[in-house]
Length: 287
Image 1 (tube, rainbow, N blue to C red):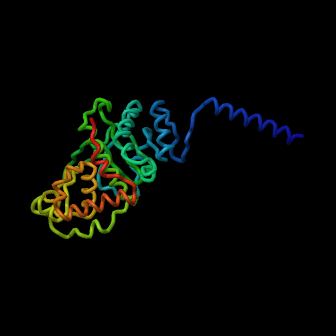
Image 2 (spheres, helix red, strand yellow; image 1 turned 90 degrees about the vertical axis):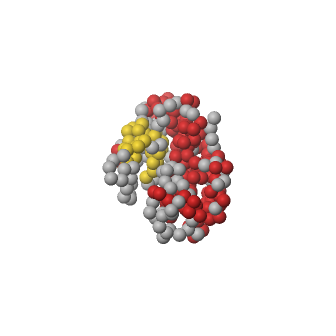
């Protein structure tokens, strides 16, 4: 008899709890590290929940310093940040829609996304060699995470050039992340024709003859910035150029045989092996 009473009381408690959950009407996603929604802005939380369900990635505006700075490897670049105001989150997410999500097939992007995307109110990098020189940057990556800086304007008020610059920097950062952490593997053929033991080129023309391109993300030209280029520098310059430049803007560099060969290897690899139309990304401009 006691057992029956206990079972009856348990059933009442269970049904009551279910009724309470139904009244809340909220989907909660819990993780050892994060709980969604984060509760700072209802409109932002709604979009973030949908993004989590679509990409299995946490877009976070509340996080700890330990979270955003976490990496298993040494970090040679130095970054500074401030958390984003929850009221600025929706505007940044709207910008990401046209400068990131719209550029990929959803299933392709889901396979590529990091575990966490940190939304920041300020993001700076120290680019100084001998003294501090802090500059604002749109994005940076560490292991299994990307941090993205807010923009000061509403998306509707941004110029076409501002949107394109944000898109290009973010996509160069994202593809660098994918290569650095093994999401994308660059074919050996890309590197095979290049000599990384050469001293720096005497001119940009000589650099092109040797198969090396300008990096628009870092504003780096091997002929005057670097004594000796590495294979990582090389592929990052190509990835940045692919997302910064339209097909037409590649025309002059593609006159050089080795650049044309390396360009085609990368474009074909990204399209055929990973479903990434990198030319579409580069050709995306705004009104």
